[in-house]
Every structure is written in C-alpha cells, then in structure tokens.
Image (cartoon, rainbow, N blue to C red):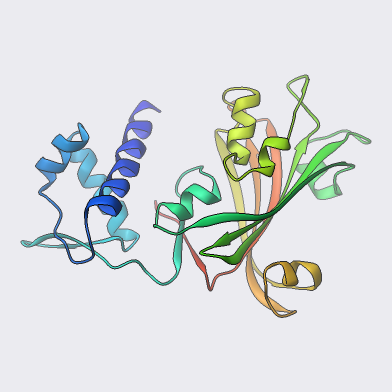
Length: 239
C-alpha cells in the first residue's frame, strides 16, 4: 500500500511539473535529474514515465530522451486509480466545472438497494451531478449512498460543491470508507432529460459506467451510474 501511494504521489507531481514548467516539444531532464527533483528513485520515475507515455502525455524516443506532447483534443480519463472525475480529467490540463447538483433522500432503486445490501424500506441519498469539461456538459453522475453509514447518518451536502468528491465524502465520514471500486462499462443510447442535460440529440451514444464502491473490509458503501460523452472525454485503463 505504501509503495503504491508513493508511486501515485510521484506520478501526480510529475504531471504537475510537466504542465507547469514544460511546453509541447520540450525534452524532459534525464530520469536521474527527475528522481532528484521529486525525491524518489529512478525506478519510480521510470514507472511514472511509462504511464504518461501510455496516456500520450509524453513520447519516449530511444537514444534521444522523453518529449512533451501537445494536449490531445479529447480529454483523458484514467481509470487506473480510485480518484474523482474532476481530478482525473484535470490532470490533463482541462477545466472541470460542476453545472448542476442535487441530493434527495429517497427509497433507492432496486438495483442500487441490492448492490448496497440495503434492507427493504431503508432510505438512501440520491446525489445527481452534471459536470462540464472546458464549458461543455460531459458527464452526468447519479450516486446512491446509504442514509446511515457505520451507524451514523451521513451528510451528502458537501457534494453539492465541486471540491468534494464521493470518495472525499465517504472518507471524511469514516477514514477508509472508499478504498476499492468495481466498475462495469457499457455503450448505451441516451434519451430524454439525460440527453438534454448532456447537450446531445435523443438516442446519441454515450459510455455508461456502473460502479460500486467498497470500504476496506469489502462492505459496499456507494453505488452509482454515470453517463459520459466520449467526444469530449476518452476513458483510459492503464494496467
């Protein structure tokens, strides 16, 4: 766990370094210099550069070095770690904003109740958020969280602000509440209010992600469905 955390921290700092101090076409310093600047091992820097190359942020040329690429026209959504949508997209230099947000105490849909192992009649918070990338509606997210978690009522109102992600909310409620997520991806057509919210024509294709979040012992703590425009954000799974 500590090794993974150190590697992810180095990757995030290297992303920031590239975005703030280098331009497209620039050659990065040698791995040894980057390791000293980030206070990590050369192996950790090399692993981070492999991830960035897979994301098309840099290009590695044998014998010549590592060069910074121009930002792609479509934002990249890396699914290799458990992070918020905002943080995943923003690491590529895109502006992520929250256009709409609401939370209501409801009887959860049958699928969500089953995924969360809720007993009949149990209430849950339904949190709906519409995100934009560079000003264009890009993702519509619908999350269901139990009204009570670990014997205490949970307050979903912080998620009405972009600064708080689902993972932040859960871990602030109880440390270690969000450590693992299982996601199923499916191509679907969007209709009605959902299509209008995403500024799409009725029947347009989107990527649907159905995700259940678990705490450290394996208990499900949140279940959600997101609809994402693939013409604005490209999902990438790096292993």
